[in-house]
Image 1 (tube, rainbow, N blue to C red):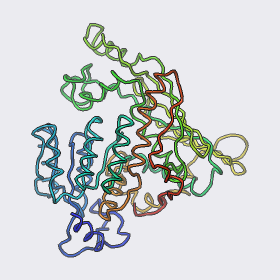
Image 2: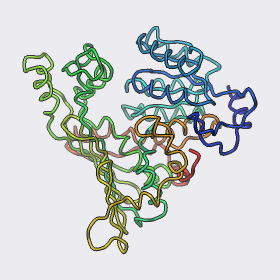
Image 3: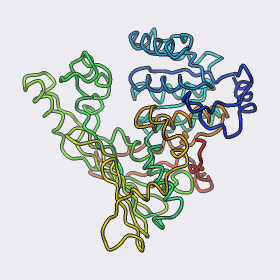
Image 4: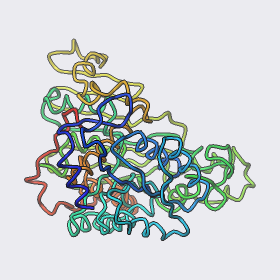
Length: 454
């Protein structure tokens, strides 16, 4: 396996860019019969199949093995592989532990994990112990112990872990990151972000289709409702922080010259899920008698060692258009942006005390990756961001180097869940963030995000 990685690293064209989509014409300049990165996918549900499809579009990757305990999802994944011109993958999924047999394959170089949250850390730890370059869906961990498990295993094995946070590659997010790096906003002071998205139709369904209208979850649910809703029943916490926090953490150089110091969290009462069940299935439905522990809106405030504050909002149990609610405030100006609102004010540039539209700013600071591959990347899912996150994973795995978002990031970003739970349980009491880098954040250099490769 290490020989294969060395071979790929030595023979790949330097700065090869992306071979993800056939019409890009940017395949790596290897030998006539190149040795490809062999990837296994653990979890081929809706999200895993999306990753699978993007892997199948690359000419430098072979999807050699897949794992899922749902035979129907295995059949769907194999069909996608064959239709893409590949050979059927080796199959694992006879029980919940069969993924370990996939990890035991000597000819697998990298693994993508897209399973329910409770499996993320244990599978990632086993993958790193098996020497695989590991890509892990969000969130990466549920407890502080699991956060440390990810870091400790990475350090003990030398195997790399990349948290597959796709929002870090959104076009407006990367443009604002470019502005941050070029000091448009001046010295940074404050951020806002979060995950506000009506997920009631995801947490509940009819038990027949993923988005079928209904009030079922758990054993009677299907797709995410089979496992995701249980977290809202049992935990009062921000259980999904990384979509908002990941991009902000990069802007603030977290774990690389800066770190999270402390967190306080508060929760509103929880009424949204009960209301949805009653309106969907009636007050006599068994699930209408349940008491969901999670508050509808979780608000967390994080303090950093460099003196910035970050407000993170979690709101998925009520009517709310999709919004991550980004705000970046510096001493020279600020931006308030999302899919439906993009505005900016820069002192000495913006006239008066009002806002101006960000269109010209986003065009001026458009990220090199989007300038280079934007037109084709949009085919990859989630507006193109899945293209970039998977490319960064594969290119990093081919070179066997640290990825843009590593084990320390996975731990720090995911730690918001258990820390918010503790703070809420203790009436908003501040919780100290562990230093997952063990002090090396002081000297670690920021990853070079402003480039057109990955």
